[in-house]
Amino acid sequence: MMSFPFDKVNNAICPEGVILGCGNPLLDMRVEVSLDFLKRFQELLDNYDISYTPGGTTQNSLRVCQVNNLLQFEKFAMDIKCAESFSAFWLHRSLCAHLAAANLFTIDHLEKPESRVLIETAQYFYISGFFLTVCPAAVMSIAQHASKHSKVFATNLAAPFVLKYFRDEFLGVLPYVDILFGNERESKAFADANNYNTHELQQINMQDKKKRTNKQINNYLLYATIVNIMLKINEKHQRIVILTQGSDPTIVYQNGNNDAVKYPVKKLKHEEIVDTNGAVMHLLEKSVAESVKCGHYAAAVIIQQEGCTLPPICLYH
Image 1 (cartoon, rainbow, N blue to C red):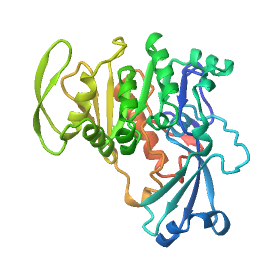
Image 2 (image 1 turned 120 degrees about the vertical axis):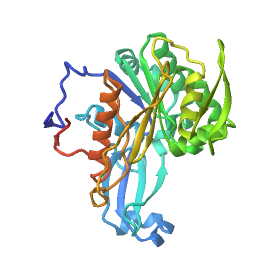
Image 3 (image 1 turned 90 degrees about the vertical axis):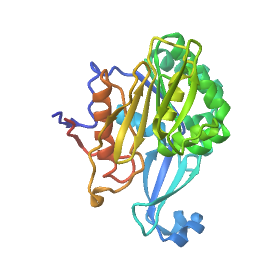
Image 4 (image 1 turned 30 degrees about the horizontal axis):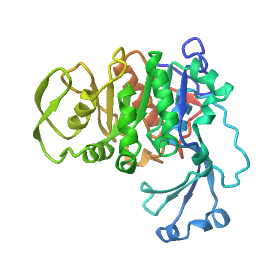
């Protein structure tokens, strides 16, 4: 068992700047409300006791990877905000996101000297799929840099609307992706956007440049297999596809392996679940199995907190 403060990081194990993230930084506003309140969102600021936590897929993931990350917020000024409302059914949340400042990102930001230093230093990149809705050129630029220098590039399926309305942008980046995350709903949206039927077991014909094979696969493996046979620019890294299923096993499909591997999830009691926001997978280990185990631990800890927050002590074992 490892027990250490969450604000201490061993730079010998994880050097400063080794992982770089790009995404939409949000400031989550959390408040418990009635269902009727969802129709009166603007009253949040004036009439309710609101708690604030840093948010956004990429920011949440990197806060776990580098737990002493310091965030300096500008004046609230509606620049970075996301409202998260809990109805009387306290485990069910409603999210209203206003990206505001996040929408102002352009590829010019990557050309700044301080940005170039961060990009050149990083060995791993985690770029949220949501960022394709803001600046696909920036995502492609980092993806190409990672491939050219044999660095690891990871992203996620973000949300069904991204795969539907930004399908071409996503498919453009996919050849550079080394690690891809998604859940059941997102993987179905990916298959639907590409005209694949995911509703039942089926025989499908899949073709790559060298050979044609028939495989009988089910819903979740359809998505993973399709992704893995698609073109990959940097063949030095095998593509890894991670499909999370909530409390059901996490499925990992690695290019070169015939079968997916299932990793069981330790289920929490109903009363232990506080907030599912930020319960994401975090992988940055030599062993895929150990990485998934660590990701499960991080998600289990975060899901028992309000927002994507971390307790004082890490008890990973």
